[in-house]
Amino acid sequence: MTRIIKICLYLLLSVIPINAFSQPATLDTLVSKSLDVSPKLRMLEAKYKAAQMQSNVDSHLPDPMLTFGVANLPTDTFSFTQEPMTGKVIALSQAVPFPGKLDSIRDVNNKAAEIIKQEIEDAKNEIVKSVSQNYYELIFVRKAIEVAKENLKLLHNINQVVRTNYTVGKSSQQNLFKVELEITNLNDKIEELKNKENMVTAMLNASLLQSQDTHIITDDLPVLQYYDLTQQQLDSLVIQNRPYLAGIKLAKQRAKLQEKLANYDYYPNFNFLVQYSQRDRIAKTDTGLADFATFMVGISLPLNFGGKVSSKVEETQALQTMYDAQYHLSLQMLDGNFGTSISMLNSLQERIKLIQEVQLPQAQQTFSATLSSYQVGQVDFINVIDAQNKLYQIQTNLYRLKTDYFKEIEELKFLTGAKELK
View 1: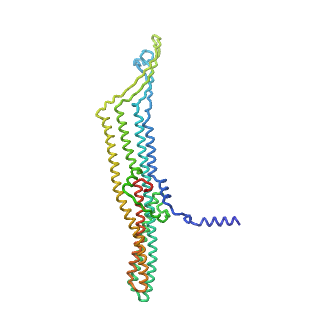
View 2: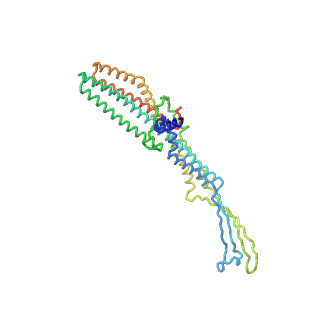
View 3: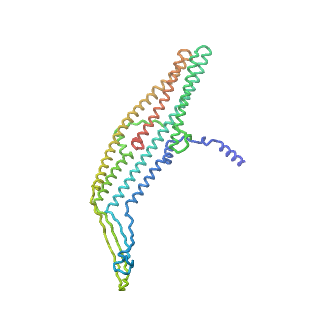
C-alpha cells in the first residue's frame, strides 16, 4: 500500500509544472545572478589580475647575463698553449637600476591595479542600476496590463447594459458602436503592452545570460519610501562612495608616482661584472700560468639628450593637472544631474500623493455615479465612456509615476555609488 502511494505521489509531482512551485523573483536574486554571470565583470577582473601580474614583471631585477668566450686566441694556430695572453673566459654580469627605482615601478603598477578595481566596482553598480530599472519597468508593464484587463471587464459590462438598453429602445446604435470601438482600442493597448513586456523581459534575460523568452516572475512594486534629498547630501555621498571619482583620484596619485619614477632617470644605472679567465701552460717553455679574475662596475651617464627625461617629468605633471580638472568636471556634471533628479523626485512625490488622495477616489466615484445615472437614463452614454477612460488613465498613470520614482532612485544610487540614500 505504501509503495502504491509513493508511485502515485511520484506521478503527481511529475505532471505538475515546475512553475507551480515558483516564487516571485526578488530583485536581489536577479541582481546577484547578473553580477555572477556578467562577461563585463569577468573581463575587468582578468584585466585587474593582469595588472597585478605586471607589477611582478616590471619591479624585479632583470635576469643576469652569463657569458662564455675565448680571449686573445692566436689566429695562426688557434692554439690555447701558444701565447700567455690566451684564456678561456666565463663572466657573469647583472644590471642594477638606481636604488629605489624598482620600488617606484612597483608603486606605479600597484596604483594601476587599484584604478581597475574601482572600474570593477563602478561596473557592478551600473549592472545593479540596469537590472533594477528593467525589473521595475517589467512590474509596471504587467500592472498596466492588469489594469487594462480590469477596465476591459468594465467595458464588457457597459456593453451589456448598452445592448440591453438598445433592445428596449433606450440606447442608440451609435452608442453600441462606440463601446465596441472602445473595447477594440483597449484590446489593442493590451497587445502593445504585451509586446513591451516581451522586450523588457528580453533585456532582463540578456543580463542573466539566459534565453530571451525565459519567463521572469515578478512581485508587486515595493512600498514607496519618500526621500527628502538635498544637493549637499548627494555631493557628500558621491565624494565618499562613487568608484568612478575614486578612480580619478587614484589616477592622479599614479601620475604623481610616475613623476617620481621619471625623476629616477636623472640618476645613473649600474652594471656589475665578474669575469674569470683560465689559462693553459705554455707549450714551448712548459711554463704554468696563473688564472685571471676581473671585477668591473659600469655606470650609465644620464645626459638627458634632447630633454627626454625632463619632458617625461613634465608629461606626468600635465597628467596630474588633467586628472584634477577631470575630477572637478565630473563633480560639476554630477551636480547638474543631482539637481534634475531632486526636482523630478519632488514632482513625482506630489503627483503620486495627488492621484492617490484626490484624483483616483474622485475618478472611481465619478465612474460609479455616471454608470448608475446612465442606467436610469439621467446622463448620456458618452459620459460613461469618458468617466471610464479617465479612471483607466489615472490608474495607469499612478503605476507609471511610482515606477519612475523607483527608477530615479536607482539612478541616484548609481550616480552617488551609495547603497542607500541616507
